Length: 95
Image: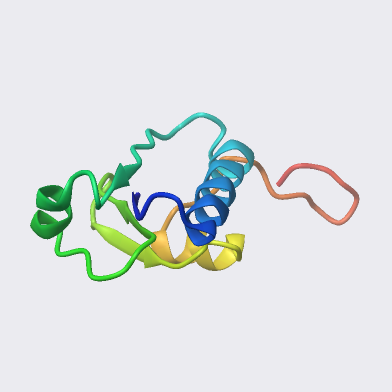
């Protein structure tokens, strides 16, 4: 995730992303947070125009989501990531 340090938007996006990863991906992820002010070369290489920008590199295809990541469903859909937790049936049984 590419962020700009010391902004409230960054803090919100990072907190939302950590929550999504912990709740939906159950440890099946690797997260790297890159401050564009400290590493402008990396931001330029990835053509980052706005922050925060989340990039999912694997599995392919590469996907990007920009914003505070407050809507879990939209984030998962945008990244084409499927949560590992089973869906519940009508009577609470796993499908």
